[in-house]
Image 1: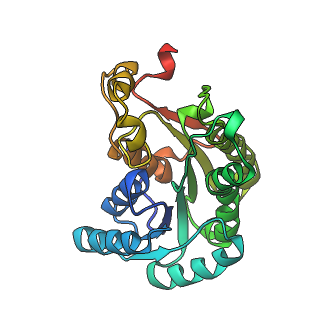
Image 2: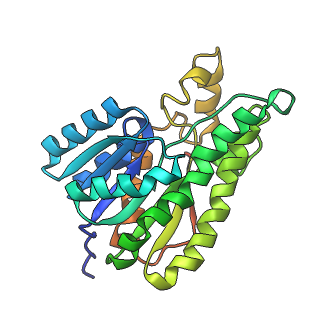
Length: 254
């Protein structure tokens, strides 16, 4: 059986200056696809884009942007498209977490988490929709979390945002399937990123996270980036509306 090829259209990666976003951009660029990297950290986005262009010889661009400012998305898409070409893929990896229990959760904290993690996701798809619907093999990947499946008392807004993304994925998959656009989510477990670093600095937490995995360790960003590249490729051409759990087996034993 002949292995299908990956699309060659550009991929937009939010949160691409570090962590899972950067690993996703690296995996996509390694497959020869142009990449636009958006991040609140403008210098990090530009630096990552330059490194990927040098390493993989693909068109790249880095842009500092707040993805919650929906009015600015169309202009940002136009500016990025001018460098990398038309978009056929999206990885929404930008995310924030606030460690606030229900007793201490305020409006600003709640809104900050939901705006980045959840509300921005369909807004990004909307901004890219003309490109996506015209592209062969177009696909969208949202980075959710196992916290969208299990309860964590310390981060209710984060859990709600990641659970909400799973519903958004199913809804958008149903709407965009007839246009030839697939929509899926990845639910990482405990991955060694800057977001997780404060928790890992607490005595005993790193060991607890590692032992909660059947594999006995914390995951690496590349172990999420590679599945993201797979879901964007034609190797996943019949997969849509799904949530791929990549957690080393944490959920399987809870």
